[in-house]
Image (cartoon, rainbow, N blue to C red):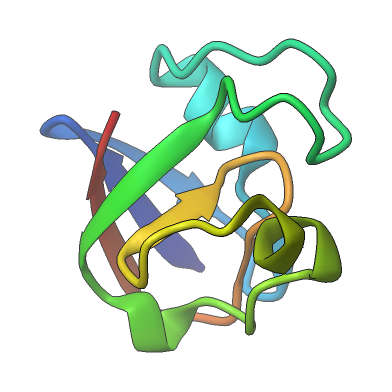
Length: 84
């Protein structure tokens, strides 16, 4: 199991799974859920290497190196610490 921590709150997720549901449980808002609106941008403080590479939708959005879309990110394993 992997761990996602958003603003100090922790949620367990299966290795290799999207973090969207866990982030929603931790208070991250979602609108389109398709990587188009940017509502769910999180800033990764630790564990970026534990996420799969950015999706084309994330690349198109022009996010900073430490930002991800919670609706698109997939955790490989380990722990990711982020803020919203």
